[in-house]
Length: 288
Ligand SMILES: *[C@@H]1O[C@H](CO)[C@@H](O)[C@H](O)[C@H]1NC(C)=O
Ligand SMILES: *[C@@H]1O[C@H](CO)[C@@H](O)[C@H](O)[C@H]1NC(C)=O
Ligand SMILES: [Ca+2]
Image 1 (cartoon, rainbow, N blue to C red):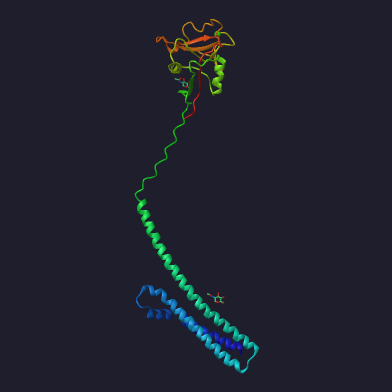
Image 2: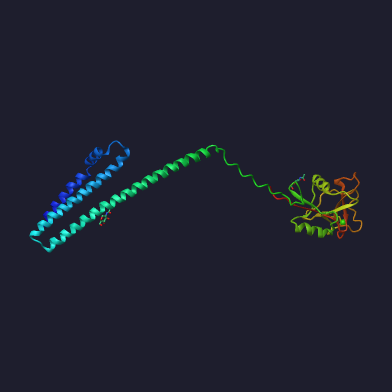
């Protein structure tokens, strides 16, 4: 008996439900009520839905009334609880309609706000595109860092080597001069070609007897000249009659005097290694 009634109940609900939600009904109702405005086109279905749900609530209420009349004849605790349950269902259903309607209003508001934001953003994009369009040329290349100098500031570059000429009044023994050059990453100058000799000599200041140590000596065996890198001297740019080992002279120096007729390739002399003189250092240049 209970099952039967419930079936009927469901049929009723289904029938009305399908009536309300069937697209044909919805659209025809909407079209009659909507008029010509495009905006209303989207609002009308919600109104129709609200109307449908309200109608559904009223039908539920009627069923409830009918049910309570029926149960008046043979009231049981079972039927009591059933009717109160359906009452609750109906109430929540109606409450939901109100809640949904409110929610709908909120969503509509949000939608219009978002649409406004969207159009504002579109405007911004258009403006930005207008301002950036002329800048089609690529960003100027970052200027390369100035090439690192191959020599320290006091050193002069020639053919992959850096040369340092001490000031004239700086005085050291030959070995102390070599130590100075070593501490600065080099050695006393080793000179293989006339070009190299001339380049160095051109750097020297003229003077009465401006003498500068460079990297040659015959300390071990007399008149057996070696460079500071251990290689044996071949040729050289000695002054005529030099080296003469006049007073046990085992270290080489070059001069640049006031006499303009003197030349770079005839400027070498020998002198005692303990004599204090200016000096010439050489070291490999930084690769560029
Ligand atoms: C409708 O009400 C029921 C019962 O209170 C609830 O569980 C459900 O979430 C509600 N639905 C909506 C959309 O509010
Ligand atoms: C330049 O250096 C190279 C390698 O050390 C050497 O062979 C050449 O003779 C040098 N040239 C001059 C002009 O000194
Ligand atoms: Ca000597």
